[in-house]
Length: 182
Image: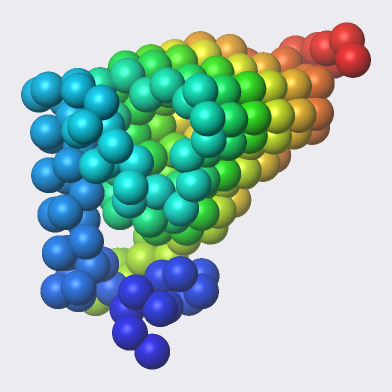
């Protein structure tokens, strides 16, 4: 298996692999072009990396992606300025979801063992957002998290556990605040 195959299968992989480095370079170049000149053409070149980008989806400049190839945006998704999507695993953002400025999605993580980290080992877990999710600015969403339909995450939160549908969470770590009406 190549390192790309390992990464996509959820196995431990080495991000220093030349193929992975080239894919990240390509993604960064497209992000930089869109940030410098947020034209429809530069946005189209960026979203061409994505597995899917739905209709009426709007992406503000300043977005950063690791690869872009494991991102699926449904219809009517809004990504505000400066979002970061580290997509070593799938990042799925459901229809009608609103993502605040400087929200970070981290699918990738590192082993706790120092020797494994020194070898460059990494692993990734997918992040999934349901329909009509609202994530406040400067939130961090960690590997393996799912946000249910209609969930709301308050600004500045760190989400390390999945959030049920129609639930408001806030804080570091994000904790239940209240259930939201259906």
